[in-house]
Image (tube, rainbow, N blue to C red; front, side):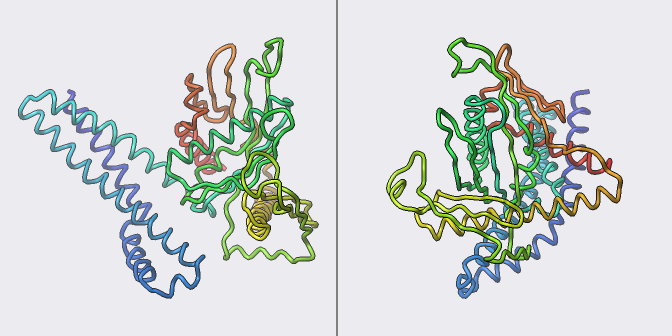
Length: 370
């Protein structure tokens, strides 16, 4: 019976992997890789730094995706042979090895399957993530800083390049807000399910009476803009202010007016950047953030028009999306998907894969239902 179960699991994983291969269109990916390799070998490519980075990034991503799918297929074939060997020789050690490998393959193929669900217009792009404190005073500011750490640790665990562009520090502790950029394929599609209000319940470390405190922070996720987005921002539509960087730092911090704040007058959107050393670099980074915010505003306006045509009066799916309870018990629960865990320490240290993956599946189900 165990052999039948093992074979059935292999067959199920094989079918899933075949579906993934079809969705990713591996044959087309091989052709694109060949074309990108030709472009990458052209010495003149680096005359345009931005174009060169796009080509090399896309090439690396496709190579990794194809290599991963092909590796999973090879391992799936091998584990079946391993199990047959264990059966033939009645070897429990080999059977245990086959079982462990099958468990790993189950997890990795499930992760790849989730990736195929990211098919939105901007899902393949990098992300700009903005966290800001809500109700809860100093506890909310501290909670916002905890969330910033949680997401940067998540990026580190996945090997994603990320950079904090701007931090606004609170007076007593924590931060009022922060913006960071994630340069990784599908970062937007992945992290966009984290958008919404995050609620923390704990004994406040700032209350000398040791009372329980509920605090809130909000997460916003935007796609990084590209040249094809065509968002023109006339100079007459923006107001640029410069100021001295604040908060912890080293050389050049608090010594020059290098930080930049840009106000988009027609919409009232305000962005700032103080991470770079020069005013020119900070202005360029702030303009990228503004471009992304205007792109998201345009996307929301287009969605509102479509919702109006459909008579859709539902609220935003991202609001009140997750609760983190540290007292009187330990639990993190996603209010949309029902995913939960009692290991709050690991979650706050960036181990949020289960929440992200279930969120992606939930969003896909909601989209299909609409």
